[in-house]
Image (cartoon, rainbow, N blue to C red; front, side):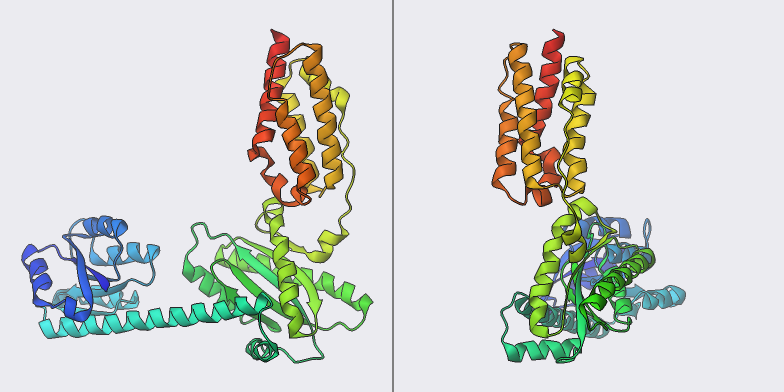
Length: 410
């Protein structure tokens, strides 16, 4: 049953609208009755509705301002506007703002019911389209997870407009930051992306887009050149979309493929690159080749310098040095073995200082927990370490530095 809110500043008319319609017969339920836009907005925020029947001219906040405020929060709410003959200019503005219709006062019972039935029909159509859309996206995800047979694959190839063979393609996954983002912006961006020549897209709700780009590359040498051009293409596309629609995105480019059956594997490879989002941040575009070409380096820890910071009671310098050791080397994609060796050296150094100054603390155990975590999780440096500042053993490690510098000064 769809929910309705009635907004009218005149109590007699408000009650009249409530009583002249058999709401239940229309599949509707009146859940709010408000006397102005401010009161209506407060009610809507507590319990949103599907349909708003509102007067235009009201104190505090008029009906059109109410419409704009609610549409900013939920674009699919439908409005029926009540207006007098002398408010025709307002009514025209209401139509421009995509209200269902407007009704002239005095209100005709049959006309109001007709408008309500039409609004319910439109809402049902919207629900049906949404279900169809969800079903289509579910099928796409089923295919991209490698769960489709050849016949289904050919269907998806036709939907994307891909040639059965003889063409080369690259797949990329775009993810966007949903925080404070309106659905209309996403829709507008998708519409614009569909205009790109040689690019096919599939929206994967709520926050991702599969992009398939056709390229021309025959040999291995040409492929490496093509990969650079593909990265440049998606980077330029990203910059354009972000500046035009104010949407922050992160793009991961997978390997090339020539047959649609290869797309699921390429897609999953690109999706795996999303773990780098927490390191690279939105606004970045990375490729599988870039990650594979990264060289890992050993981490150099200046034990003498760290010891000096601690013994000189330079707490902030010691803490900052440890943070830099972890975080900066994460950005260089340091090897797990290097991180492990660094943590062991740090543990030994702190244990020596603890014994030398006869300090009592259980916080040193945090260092060994950190070592164990690095050892047990092979991808720790790729995914978990970006959360290092929130990792309890690391926090305890920094507390131990605080403790040790304080005890030395006592």
